[in-house]
Image 1: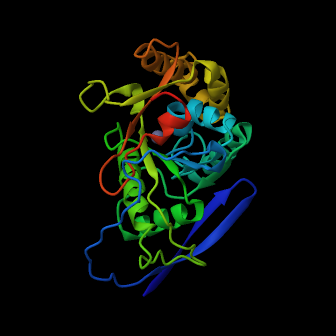
Image 2: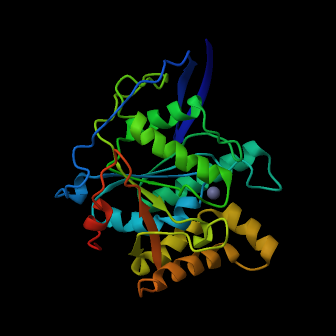
Image 3: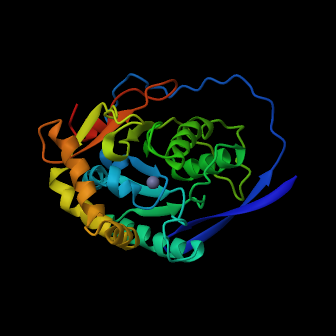
Amino acid sequence: MSIGYFDVAGPGRSTRFLQEHLPDTPPISLHIHSGSRETVVDADPASLNILAIHAHPDDIEIQCAGTLLKLKQLGCCVSVATMTPGDKGSDELSAEEISNVRRAEAAASAAMMDVDYSCLEFRDLSIIFDNDSRRRMAEFLRRKHPDIIFAPPPVDYMHDHEITSQLVRDACFNAAVPNYRTQQWDPAPHCTKIPHLYYVDAVEGTDHFGMRHPVDMIVDVSDVIEKRLELLTCHASQRNWLQRQHGIDEYINASRRWAARRGKEIGAEYGEGFRQYKGHPHPTENLLGKILEIQ
Ligand SMILES: [Zn+2]
């Protein structure tokens, strides 16, 4: 048995968890039922936990912060998390230095949204799908017990996004299995339901071949787009880096351009696209659409 550690940092806190590596138990056949796969429930937004997880600081602001702002306005409890602290996002600072900068930027953006922020402390370009990663993600979901969860899409422009997508989907199932042990210090109780899982748009709204990335719902975020772009300005290290490279404010311009393209598809000025995961055993009702009244 070997023992390792990882830290989950939030604004003003850093919690250390013990991670034990124990022999895996043999696989068993499992069927978990959410109890309401097709039934539309009458949900009070104020009772809903919303969790958005993406790979790097700024991904959430680019892909779904407008929708999160709207959910927050409706009274939902919203949390955001990044897999990494963006430790390779600089050509000037060391990994540790840029990580400290980018954790603070992500926390500032979350504070502006008035939501919780966590970093799962994976590392850029090093997120892999293994049992350690699976346990860490399942533990995080058990601590957040989301009703709705946003994740990167299965197909996106880079590996960290795609593996994060796999880990979130996997953890939605595993977190609800009572005998699945996350082997963390002071583990949380297992989840009692499978959340509604929504994939956010791919970067630039395109797939590996330049074709339009498929979404099945577009949220009109025209009324919150300026606030969304203001959140993005919290990520000054990335904005300045791109500004040096492009000579223009491409960071903000690209985000506005991509949102405008999605918005145009529903006749709105700006939009954010989502695709709901409807495979077994996730609930299939469009809870997000229902509470945003866009079904
Ligand atoms: Zn990213």
